[in-house]
Length: 281
Picture (cartoon, rainbow, N blue to C red):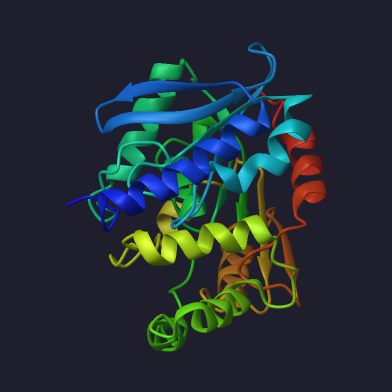
């Protein structure tokens, strides 16, 4: 089954995405993987330290357009559209519990010739980055997690609010967006993409697995940054921060009390962290 509700909604979402990708002017390419074709941005000096940006579910590499340019001055930036999400990659939904997203990522990295890289992941992309790092910590030079899944259970209260709101059309979507963004200003382009995906994308319903203590403890030698919002409606960010601090005392934890799940101003802290750590080979 396609992750899009119909061919028409797939065309609308992908058309919106393609237009903005083309407007960015950033270099792009396609890589064939065992999970189907993967679309990605590849920007910066090919010999620079690589940084891989992994977006969350219900999103695509549009989430990183504001970061690709600033990072590309120092790094080789790779920003793929994850398979099974509303981007340009294969619309095959990957099974989380079976480890398919991690298998896809390893396959992609191998085809790109990336033996080691820094990883930045947001939400489900953070979960994916964590999974790769805990499985192969020597392949990770640095790990930055933004509102990451995988550390603490998701909040059921969000679904209990969001599901009925999803039947209220534009007004309901606006209230869902406010739960996600809290007080942050929502860019119109983000709001328009949310409208398109609400109408035409089938969301992930599989529970996101939580990594156990033994897995997370394998990251002891990896520089880790966690940025999360104290008012995250989707994830228990305080429990995530407490757990990470207990297991990885050297991790840098930035819990922003007023922020929600979507953190739009993490760029400076993220770039500073990568500049301190990602050049390590």
